[in-house]
Amino acid sequence: MVKPLVAIVGRPNVGKSTIFNRIVGERISIVRDEPGVTRDRIYADAEWLGKEFSLIDTGGITMDEEPLHKEIKLQAEIAIEEADVIIMMTSVQDGITDMDDQVAPILYKSGKPIILAVNKADNPELRTDIYQFYALGLGDPYPISGSHGTGLGDLLDEVIAQFPADEPELYGEDTIKFSLIGRPNVGKSSLVNKILGENRVIVSDIEGTTRDAIDTPFITQDDREFVMIDTAGIRRRGKVYEKTEKYSVMRAMRAIERSDVVLCVIDAEVGIREQDKKVFGYAHEAGKGIIIVVNKWDTVEKDNHTMRDFELKIRDQFRYLSYAPILFVSAKTGQRLVRIPEYVEAVYHNRTQRVQSSVLNDVMMDAVATNPAPASGGKRLKVYYGTQVAVSPPTFVVFVNDPELMHFSYERFLENRFRENFEFVGTPIRIIARARK
Image (cartoon, rainbow, N blue to C red; front, side):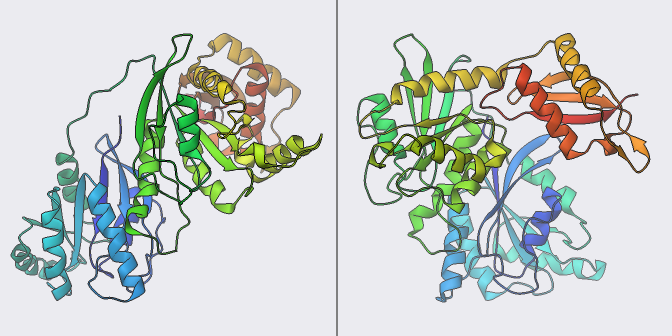
């Protein structure tokens, strides 16, 4: 099920980033007392009263013609276009400004649920001033304080009350959903077309011509059901692009969320770019099955070591994806494309498999006996037993004497032992240390 999308919009310097950080519980956005400092949308997952949602922090809407203000306006407009619920931020200290008067009609015309938040209401005496904000025509104003966190509970209650009803799953339980992500012009649409054997998606050499994520169900010759989700390329941040191109990151995020397996596509001609790491990191953090697909392999001059050398570069640059299989393909010639459904199905099964507790503990106890955890501060980690608590991705709870003693390196050691003994190729593994009661 796709999480609802909540956008925080408004003019610069009303505290959007501070509220964003309060809601998600981390200092993700840059917070500076300077208008327009948040130049790009920032995304994070959040939760309130058991309701999960995605939150966007925008740069702010302005009507100025300065390049930065143009960029911020575009970002906010796109957030408005895509969001399920919109929080409009204002400031009680400033009152209603001319910019607020211009922003409110834009939001109202969106037809989306709008919740009016009046920030910086730290002083109880200022709370009487919030009634002026009824003049914006957006309903009841909610007084909040980003610096103290007051009023956020009432605000979030109203946010989740406006979430759309859950949409029914479109596909059968056994249908495997996978998406293709990557920078623009790496050949994702061409891969889709070649796999399907028909032109269902626009293919162009102009970067970013695929505007939407397009679902294409298909059945293989052995009657395996798949849904392929094609997404627009994800562009580098901080550069001004055509307005429609700004949808690409958001739509890719939603496609990743809907997918069981994600194909991370690299252009063999161009090679690995820094943005590839950020783009593929979205899928890794979401716990999706991952296959690294190197497209346009037909264009590369080769010798006996070309493929091995390219794979070594991938492993060096994508160390967090050491578990992901690599497939060298060509959308132009069809080289190895027949193997993509096979790889997707294998990774899907690895991501959804369960390990019997007795077998898991045999492996884990053998690993601990072979390599006991080092002492830290005079204390040593003791591992008692473990159990698998979830799939998609496989998640294990390991019961120990003190979770604080579980160092990242030892957690990685246990993960490697699990991978050596069980088939977890293509899927991340999550290990949670918990104190034994």
